[in-house]
Amino acid sequence: MPKYPIVAESLSTVSRFDWASNNVDAGMLLEAVASAGIDATDSALVYNAIDIEASVRRYRDAVGEHGVGFAVKANRTPSVLSHLATVVDFASVSSVAEHASAEAAGFTEFRFVFPGDSEELRRVVGETSDGVVFCNSIPQFKEYAGRAKSVGLRLRTGPVSRFGVDVGQLSTLSVRERGSVGHILGHVADVRDIVQLRELIGLLRDATRYLPNVETASLGGGMTALFRNVGADRVRQVLSTELLPYVQAVELEPGADVVMGSGYVVCTVVTVSRNASFQEVTVDASVFSLNTWTDIEFIGCHFIGGADRRRGGPTRISGPTCYEGDVWLISEEAQEFAVGDRLVFRGFGAYSAGMFRPIHGLQYPVEVLVSIASNEDCGHDYEGANAAFRSIRGGAWLDSQSHAE
Image (cartoon, rainbow, N blue to C red; front, side, top):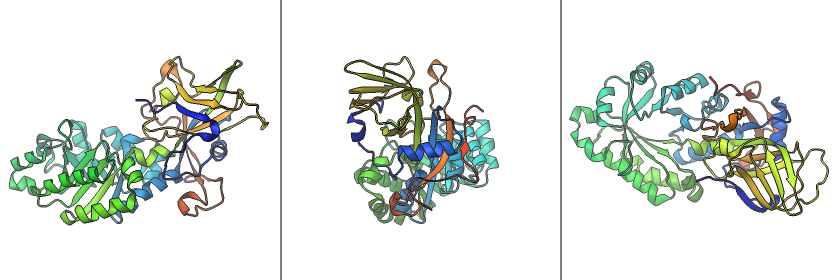
């Protein structure tokens, strides 16, 4: 189901989402976009490195000295991956293309989770010295055993899942084969509370009864709700007392949750029509085309000219397509908009770029990584005052060609 439109009484009463970092406003984003050389009339997909770091830190708090990775399928933008390579321990990849993107970005350690198989995949695995291949089936395991440096098994986490090996199937492996498995992976679509976390832990523990040499247990998938509902400290307590006694290390492999709150869409009003009772506003970016993996958030707007605007009454803000559902926001009350006004929305860091739908031939948005710091951000001092802007590695990264190659 679509996570849009936003519905609110007014633009100032839009509810806030519980991101790991919540101190960026529209003015800060627009200043960063201008500093990156993006034209004041261009729409853009802007990623904030500080938001990424805040999300990673939450997972670090849960596993301590153990590993945190990133599922590359959530975002393959070169600048984002390059930054992630400096703050997480490994890349989890599901295709040759994802491996190539992560390797080019600076990742040196990998977790291979391939839904299928091919000669090209086998070549990549054979050429990679630092990584674990998580096999999805017993035949795939037999194919890679001895071929890859480290072989693991992905466990089936539900009766209808098409991925993974049933724990009961482990008894069909020979003693030598069982002894060669050093890693196990449990990946679920959504873990929302401690009960569901314990179910996943129980599955991993059951597997260790058959696999005596397992050193590392990896947990992947959707953990957004878990960390928001329960908190990192409680997750760490459960992992350390109920899973670590059975293995030497625990790894977390988040994807969307690490980056989705870091992605902001900056767009421009292109048309405004109004009558006595309603204001229709169209912007140059399509929420339908960008696809969102989470609820979106309206951050704010910049009115050209800086003058106070009259009340415009009920307002609908939509994208530039003929799709009726391409609606960003519906407000019972808003100021009058004008062509050229800039708006900022949040929640587009995960899957939005990779799953972009170019309806009507809409152009792929310019992408840029910036780092906007706030003294109040998560209680840490990030090198400066509010609205501070710093570039990444000698200059803001422009990724307008990154997905055309």
